[in-house]
Length: 536
Ligand SMILES: [Zn+2]
Image (tube, rainbow, N blue to C red; front, side, top):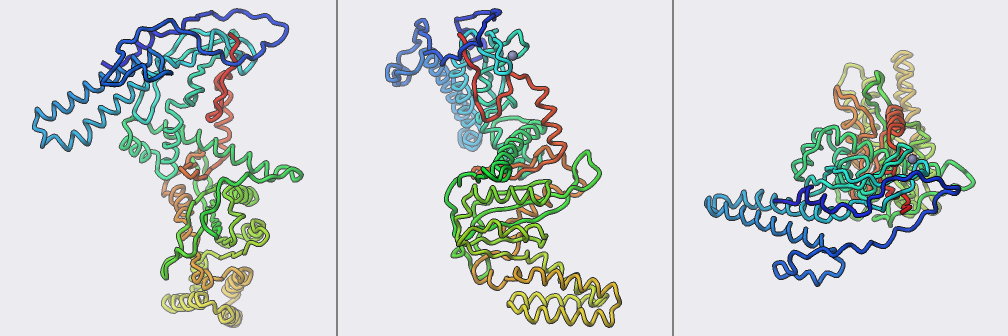
């Protein structure tokens, strides 16, 4: 027998005042939470349980002790039964199942009972009247209502004090305390769900959560929770951006959250196209990955790994994504690194602005993503050699070798003579294509520093910084036939808060709609846990 709702309900708070019409000249003065009322003495069922004495715990309310003891007794009984059954059935055969499933399940159940025991007393009862957060009116205590929600140990049910006012607003202070106003899951579970959904499809996130934790969730829950967490990250990010760039007079970057773990700051950016549900067209997104490198960790074949990766991603214009990158750069303290290494696909926006990230005394190394260079050379080979695929291949390979060896003069001489040849013999169109490629490389000559990068243990391609750009962007968003309903869905927040945020108009519209629908008394943000003001 577990601790059920019925037993919990027997502890309804004593003061049950109905909301009274309050007519006051001045708004009620908020009062601090009262000291806990002296409860009538509740008998202790067991002064001692399994050698543990109640008297040793000065703060433990008697009813919680009673609940704990009851839960432990039930849990012990259930564990004993589980193990006993295993012995009866032939322990050797049952041992694996017992350790894998039987004991964990019993312990999870025990944990849930203990949580419910604690919640049997803590219902968010804050007195008979509260000030309405939305309109300043009075909300009166109306009783308790049960609600089930997910914890790391599975689903539990709490009975929460409910306040409602003549203004039509209502509030459950316990929901605010626990952070379950918006979703039937504690914040840690919400973040874990969002974290998984950042890397996996919703279906896989559901499967993974259910595999690892004793809970059952739906696809929609994952989607909604992710949207909420994404929305918050996005709001935080946007606020940081406004602080940094909104007002030039009082501009300020966020305080660094820590000390960079390596001397080289790496910033890689890339863009791509993806389809969004409800929209016919492809949308362009941009992703930035930020992290640090410790070149001494490089091996002869591999550049040093990028550590502490953080993302920013956006369906935004170049200026906006650059500002996000810049804010994150400061937040991570990367401006304190001695070297700034930027990798990009050659899109002009990052090259024209990348240097702005560079602080005094910081060495600036911009590198054109090697993968994009290889692609340009392969295309140029086709223009020059037409159907002679092998010759085109050899040519582009030789050109890459020149870049690898930092033979830039001969690289450009070859491009020049290719252009001369094409102008004379290949026709206007091909000559123009060659000219454009020559220009592309000339504009980016300072970024063709692959030999230097290799020697210094730095990456030469954004893919080396992070399959993430491919992953977050192309693979995740651009899966064949898949259209994304971008509810900020792929935002992620890992233990070292990864920041990847997707935004579209549909997201904004959705959230605006959502806000209008919500009950004002329950509008507390996911992280803000401001409780209503207590009147009496
Ligand atoms: Zn109200």
